[in-house]
Image (tube, rainbow, N blue to C red; front, side):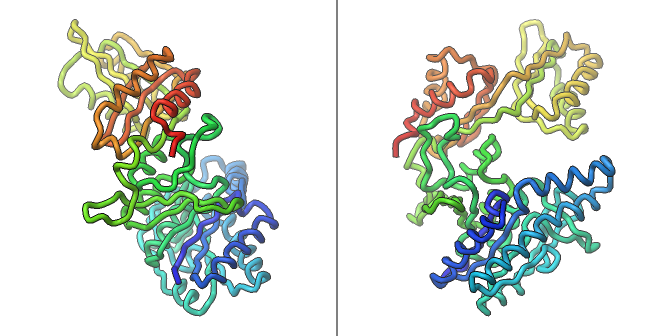
Length: 412
């Protein structure tokens, strides 16, 4: 008998028929002798609808009240699923975040989990009851309802699995696992049997939408085996786990493949301050005000010219572009720079794989493959297990397909 935490997303909970389908899946796992704790999201689109309604009343309202409103979406789905399980002959009990309780800080709309009391949930499991827990929400020290931000139900599921010392956390979604890249861009993309926490974290941060970043961080930190599976198609999904260790314990082998996947992000914008004086502290002088404006910087390149000046280039999310451009334009005047250049027609394409640690030549192979298709690289960034390049957005699909083929990712 295993203790399993299952998380079902908004698409899985999108209608009464789908909720009943989820109830039958949960019942089948319980019939095999497993103890199951279920975490659910609101119905697909419901949280957006609720927040839109709130902001139509007051677009700059108190975020505590926004959380009070947004949290009701999951309160509906936990009750509906508990009723569906009861109908399927499975004893069940629904819980909101505060009823567990799941304690968080007071950063409304993006709260972070501080503590989970699993006593009631474990008692239910022991008594043969399936707890159904509202994802995305918790309670702070003032007993105010908080929400965990976008994708917060994934984080709830993983955090509960860690707190309950579950054997596995299963994330049910509308895809049947993690693929080598987006199948809509490369039809030859292949589902991975397993991938490391590190690789999945890079994939998520670089644009892969399968899992929310914080949930992967949590799983890696607490060593919770994480599996991505489809609600609608039976199959093994993708197991996200540790690398093989020296003692031969199971995990995703570093030697299995050089590259595990290709991620891409269309939401990048590029800014360059040209002709900045080349002196110590210039990077801090530029990025300090950008950071103070709560704008996250991604890739950075600094080129020093023969005339003693430097071009400083960085990328930000497109949603932050207008604010970043205003900051940079003001900085350029203050620093006596020659001007500001920008580009919105870019994408970031990244290779990810723990095999990079033990194999040389990955970067040159990547650059040769792109050059053969006349794809120009604007920026390059590397880490131990990833290489990212910025290219023109019109070359996105060609670049992904070219790299997918060049590294043989369609092969098992």
